[in-house]
Length: 110
Image (cartoon, rainbow, N blue to C red; front, side, top):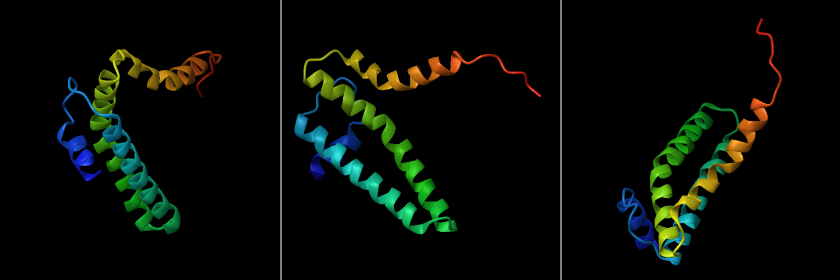
């Protein structure tokens, strides 16, 4: 488990290798637990100055894990013999929201 998480961080720029299924899911579990703990701490602290710190920690965690997460997802797709272009599906909900926003009528700016 810890070896898989260590490899997650060490292979953050490896977009051409492969990742075993168990290694991928250990990383997903560990990142999910860390994110949930930060979020629960943020909820527990409420609207205090410490909550701002935990929000900053959450944003830093998401930012720090973004590139390694994309990397491990690409390696997992490659290991399962899928085309890495399938990772584009992750952006689909965002594109749908943007298309809906583009369909809104013009508003006068005041």
